[in-house]
Amino acid sequence: MALAVQQSITSPEDVMTYPLGGLARVYRQAARGQVPVEELLAGTGLQPDDLAYPERTINAWQEYAFVHNLLAASADPQVGLVAGSCYRLGTFGVLGTAVASCETAGEALALFLRYIDLSFTQFNVTLVSDGDDWVRIRFADRVPLGDLRNYFLDRDMACAVTIVRDSVGVAQADGLAVATRRADPRWQQACQRILGVAGEVAAAHDEVRIRRELLATPLPLANALQRRTFEQQCRFESWRRRQSPSSTLVRVWQVLAASARVPGGEEVARALAISERTLRRRLMAEGTGFQEVLDHYREARARELLVSSREPVERIADRLGYSEASAFIHAFKRWTGFTPGAFRTRGR
Image 1 (cartoon, rainbow, N blue to C red):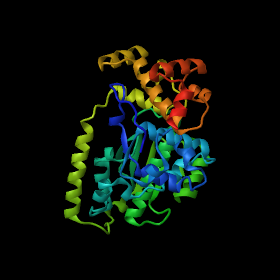
Image 2: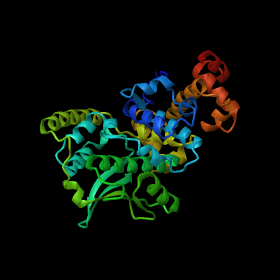
Image 3: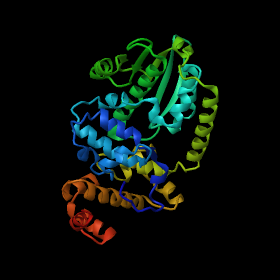
Image 4: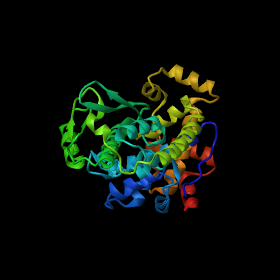
């Protein structure tokens, strides 16, 4: 079970949740047992046994912490492609079942994108048709992801390639291609090696390209009644998620969680493409302030790191944006009544 984190108005964790199944699959396949599970879960509040329960949900910051650990432990800068190739339709629960029940690949793709908010993606995803031989699944930034952006983009594009290929049964290189705005020839080579598709770098957009004729491919598990039943469930779940507010508070929390070292107000405002004054005004309108959000995030992350990792206090202080460990120790004692060392001892 994930460790309990104190809830308050400054904690948007309840509107930033994902099924644990995707992360568990990445651990089993992408890490390939080469990295101790305890190292990958450090600071996430998760225990190794949790990975056996894919139906459980995790908060976005827990996934971000896992990815930070994975990137630090992996020697492969394209590990996101490996991670994405691990996903299958079943990973997406009711959405995956609805998609598999469609008549054709085109109908399945349209349904998946209609309920994309039920997936794991961190991006805005659209289907683009320019009138040529290709249709394009295009990815655009939705939230600031900092150093994690390339991982999540690679993961989502590789996931799209794998699911389309599995659905229509195309051969490795037939009918699929990928493109990125990055100008890195190693990425191009990795796409061929890991996904078996051609990759274009320095492109105008980040996208997966699908030959138009593939959209007419009939799917082997087509079932109209099942498709209607499960799409109705998707519709309800999508509606339920939209009831949760997409606020400045949530976006600030995401910026903090995606950063290897917790940034200050000026950096957060820059990541959100607004002025620091506007950031503070919007948070005030939501009944909180930047320092309050920052303190709550720091406390929650500090609790997790102290209990579930062996990082020294000085390293944790630096990760949380403190220039001196003494300032962190003073703040943590104010929050909890304990020094970090005493809290760590009690937690174990």
